[in-house]
Image (cartoon, rainbow, N blue to C red; front, side):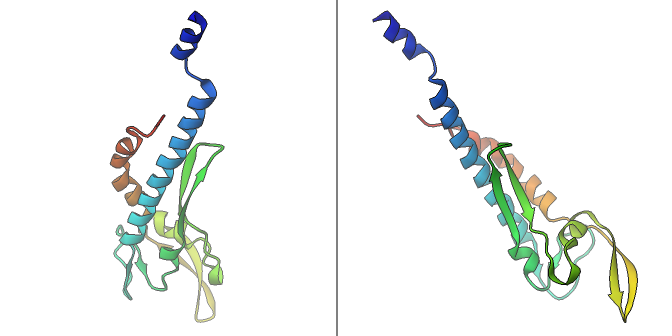
Length: 143
């Protein structure tokens, strides 16, 4: 009788760990979806280039379509961001837009260095959604 009562006072370690892992996966996946949605909405379709410091314009729709998120079970984290684009040598375009930098372009048959000012879209989306994270964790571990 006493042995049974003592067991009720302690956590079942495997059950608790499983519930925490499930809650982590659920919460971080929701957070990833919210950040992705916010980043996609910030990229507007238009023909003009966006002003430096504001989210980039979407000329072809590739950048907007290729923003993904995924839960990493080994690190218990979520990875959110654009997939590396490989169309016509534009593989580094998402990082170049987010952080700025230099790249080589082909202009009138010549290779030219071009400086790209940053047009962040993932960082601001993350910062905008970050205050919601504690509310997502609240009451996330169920019996």
